[in-house]
Length: 261
Image (cartoon, helix red, strand yellow):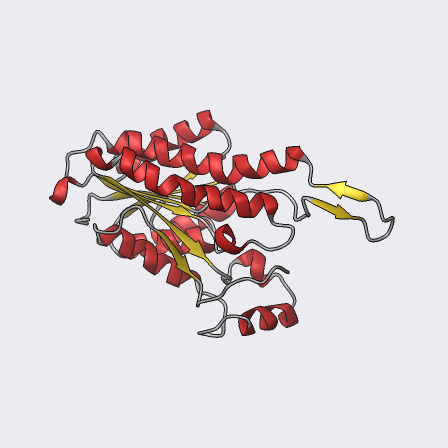
């Protein structure tokens, strides 16, 4: 995609982690950025530090998301770039398992599963489709391109571990969105891809004990460390720049394949 000082982007989950790294990379390339996040304090702090706009947005609330897009577009103009990193899920638990203390059989509650699918898969569709609706009205660039959407999946989409039924199937669903959506939007010149990060040094992960972090790092074939958020941001920028990336689900994981446990 051609990038200039009029190019605008939306980044969900931009207040921390992979979203923050994506927003930072986009701003460094001269793209105007609007950050969507529920963490108002951190979101405003990050936005101020990189020269972006902050919009308090709950990705599970359609009307709130629509209002966020309107707010961002009123300031930066219609986005040509959308990077969706925000997600919510609930609980790590087997589909059916046995309580270690009581021996009682338990089941991952349907409401927890539904919550996870809403926060991962449905939210991904919501953000992508609403962004595409706006992009479709833009004047086309080279090759007839109007925009690019990048969704965040996970290595768990392909090798989810025990207890990741909600998270893993939700992220697999995100990958499942990519090709049909790319085909739906091909006549409008809008590309769609997803990134499947492995184990990255994001704030939630860095909260683990050093021994756990060292074990995780050692499990990565090469390089033997956790992924750096800026490496995710770098791939986001490549997907923006390289117009031949379309309909792809890309692993970014140091060649790790997660074991069952």
